[in-house]
Image (cartoon, rainbow, N blue to C red; front, side):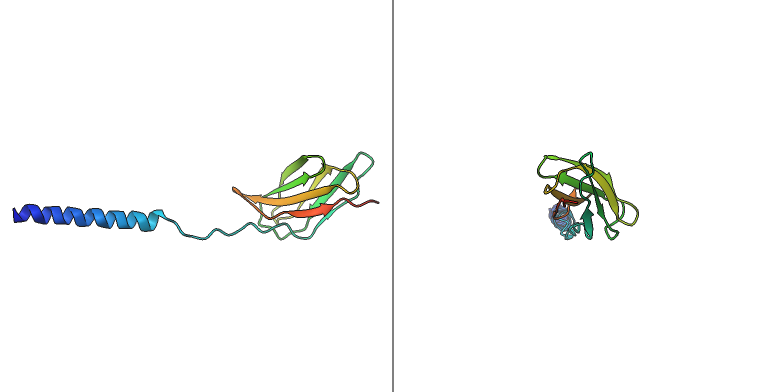
Length: 120
């Protein structure tokens, strides 16, 4: 009987240890780093065809996706950023439209940057 109790105690200790290890390693508490918003962005006035060019200088993490959304029209474009993080996209627009710009990395999206389309 004492051998049986010893085996049961060892098995119980192993189960408790495994549950503890699953709890510790199963709950990854590594903080997520937010995606930084795009910086140093500019938008051109619309050309004769109603197209604006939106560009942001380098500084983003390379190979993200740039999202440019015309809040007035409900349409936008997505484009991969360059190696240095810069990008330039064309989007339909009119003067005074609000363009929302974000950077997407994996499943995370940066805070919004809003630009107003200027006149000539």
